[in-house]
Image (cartoon, rainbow, N blue to C red; front, side, top):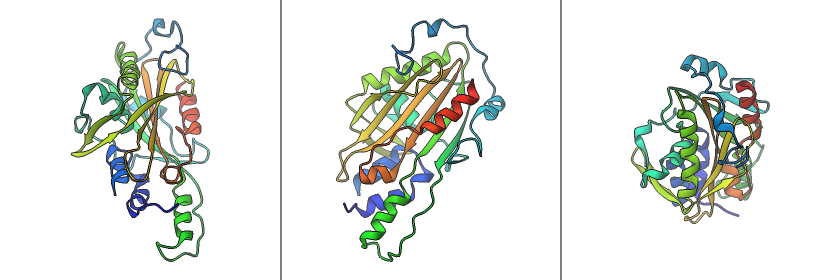
Length: 261
């Protein structure tokens, strides 16, 4: 199916942004694996609060995620003060989707993991050529995941995770928000089965299906490892364009969880 030129342009920018602005632009031309957590997990002794230097040693690095290129977040993580939902109760979701750690962390750091796929070969020379359209879709069919590690004092990690879990339920009907003045909206939010890593976790999908290109989903998961929260946000523009299902990148979560054990 042909997609709008607006979606094509958004596709070329996918690897440089994981933000509400991206989704808006494209649109317009109790268990261990849930937010309820496993019984008794909140009663565990508080873990050590890590410094920024310690977090940098623990976050995934180049060569540590098979099939992915890992490096700094292109464009950086936006300033928390510039990412706001129209309804404050939905702030934790919007911030998680833009790579911002929930709550009030003592320290944090981020990395980006991009699925390493060979670019398809194609002899098409025109934007109107169906072969070019197919090649573009294929070239953008890759997961881009931003990982943010944050460490907290006291029960800050538990509160941060709970704020996300509460927001998933409270904002299920969708929410509007803005980043650096760019306004947009998600029309629905749904909890998903999480990876089951860490002490407690919650995963969700925020979708904008109000535009002519149909549903445009973003996937996120927040996992607590003691006093540290790992926030994962994944986008796959190629999957969006072809309506293929995708999720938070499992290899990325697996590699990061292994470093936090």
